Image (cartoon, rainbow, N blue to C red):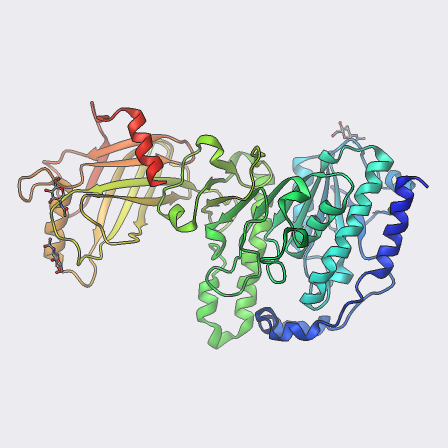
Length: 511
Ligand SMILES: *[C@@H]1O[C@H](CO)[C@@H](O)[C@H](O)[C@H]1NC(C)=O
Ligand SMILES: *[C@@H]1O[C@H](CO)[C@@H](O)[C@H](O)[C@H]1NC(C)=O
Ligand SMILES: *[C@@H]1O[C@H](CO)[C@@H](O)[C@H](O)[C@H]1NC(C)=O
């Protein structure tokens, strides 16, 4: 027998044997996830399809992204021609996750359309494993391995039948589907080009050995978007650990703007779990919409930056692009040579296009004023050649310390062009009297309190998207009324007192 025929037998046996270990249902009741989804789960109880093949492969048409019109059947070469499979084109295989309804969710046709919009001649195949995914979570999670093996068989058969280079194959898996893609990649005889994991499922996979989940071994390039990690809640719907060559954590990997999970958590007493379910779905699914955004808005691609932690990123310390430290979010991500477990961060808007513009602002407070009791609240407006971004809040993670450089992250939703001016305002906080605050402010900005050389003279800015570095100085210190607002403009003349090399060493240190 030829290699494929042996494989085919194995594959045929496989689908008959899938899913008999179903005794773990009780576990779910104890898990956070079980409690969390209790109100929804009755519809899906105990539905299992034992005889049918587990995975079906529907080649969708660009004009009918919502409909399953033609299935490619492994072992039946004529089904390839019947579905007009193009063996020289890119092939995407989209793999859904766990389902309660047993139906495709509304993102599926949107993603299919977006893929065709970007790659017109591509084959976009939807992997339908709904019958095994519609189960208790624990069982559906167990099923990912067998389904992945079936997908691997399909890939082997396609390769053997059409001689298609596997670099053309890109698996895109959401939630549990990401692990299906991982198993498919590791069981396929040859490596596929790429796997994109969209918020890969966390429960039962977090902390598991690389062979039991999506991992960098499963494809030549594995990229992962994490949008709902454990972080703050104890609900790890999405996996928290890095599991690809490049792992991107938009907005730190949790609390996506526009999803209002925090609000839902506060309202839980009144509205029960349903308020949360919507927010959770929004967070988890955000990974898909970020990917769709990257397909549709190629020219407005969001950028992510390598960083040691979300906290460090939130201080603006990781906006460098040197040595592949930044990358494009989503489809156009460049493959980083020999990368493994590279963690990257980005901020996003609440809706498409998600891209924002990142700025690092470094302020050196050098006054002798005692600020240890202060809880200052600062807003800054950025004025640029193409527009302004007004009243952005500067979040002080710690109280300002004298003789120390503080770094902040600022983001704008629109492109303001080249930055030409900064305007600062102080908001009074309850614990500090207005008069002493203003006195302090004036001494900080203009340095005139004790006649010494103190105050904030320069602000250093690094723009993530353009990689420009700029230094801003107080505009006309003598004529400013620092109690209202302080304006900074680009420093004139010989502001660069240090040679460039030293400057970059300093910023590396802070990184
Ligand atoms: C098949 O795909 C290739 C590569 O994308 C493309 O050049 C060719 O036109 C496609 N053939 C058909 C019939 O669409
Ligand atoms: C600053 O104020 C704090 C709190 O009032 C005080 O403990 C500290 O000694 C002061 N530091 C200086 C240098 O005056
Ligand atoms: C900050 O530095 C200046 C000059 O080097 C010094 O006079 C001042 O005491 C320092 N302030 C603090 C709080 O360390």
